[in-house]
Length: 220
Ligand code: ADP
Ligand code: ADP
Image (cartoon, rainbow, N blue to C red):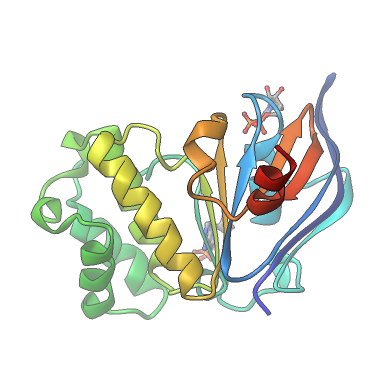
């Protein structure tokens, strides 16, 4: 079963408490919006789930296992954390080919993910000349290489133009329709209220509301 389970995460950076008992579950077949002001702990949570940062306390599981226990992680979970950090002199396609190759995937899959994120016309251009929105699409293409059932996107709409934002909404909905577990962060509720099925609202390193969007509308 495709899930992200975060339980009682605590994390401090010096005197700053980044996570203060963060707990929630992301289930399959829906988009879960991860909403809260800047500094609320969204990125830190995602980094801990991906094993890029260690928590002081608590656990984070991807489909029931710690990230470090996943065999070939890119086939289990894909993530966009910062807009793709690719070598500026590489073309988008070469960047993806290089990532794919290290995982035993070939050019066929690379061309599929390029198509998936709408980067076909830019695929042979150097990443150094890409706008933030194009780098976001490239990062999402990289996250999709392994066709993972669990996805985490940190502020994926940053830098997208209005057309890109409409595309992103449809893209996230299609991932959920395929049964994947999708966690998407934003500091703007308005960006997620029409896209997400479920909302995990956070502030100061912990969850302040955890609700289905249908429930929220019924309560209003
Ligand atoms: P969000 O993604 O919700 O904006 P973050 O997880 O980035 O929040 O940050 C949570 C808190 O942890 C903030 O106060 C931030 O300044 C702090 N923080 C995050 N990463 C670091 C780091 N590497 N070193 C020091 N403080 C950090
Ligand atoms: P290696 O095992 O050769 O170090 P990986 O591709 O497994 O290379 O990992 C490289 C870095 O990217 C690691 O820090 C890992 O935690 C991170 N990583 C691996 N898979 C993913 C993924 N699907 N999404 C985001 N980050 C990932």
